[in-house]
Length: 67
Image (cartoon, rainbow, N blue to C red):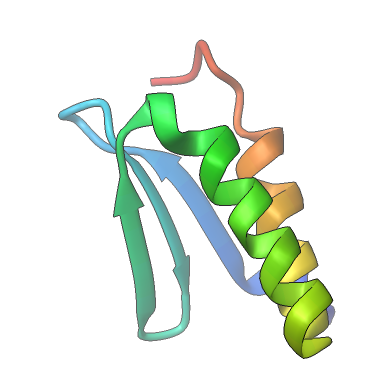
C-alpha cells in the first residue's frame, strides 16, 4: 500500500478542506487549497519526504464540485 492510499482529503460540511493521514490533519478554506498544495510541494523540495508530494496531489485532485 502506498502512502497516497492512506491520505484522506474531503470537503467538510462548512466548506473547508480536510487533509488527514493517520492522526495528523490539516484543515483550511477551499480558496487556500492551491496554496496548500504548493506548500506541500515546497516541503517535499526542502525535506525530500515523498508523502508531501502525495498530499499535494491528493489536495489538487479533490473535485471542486464535491460535497
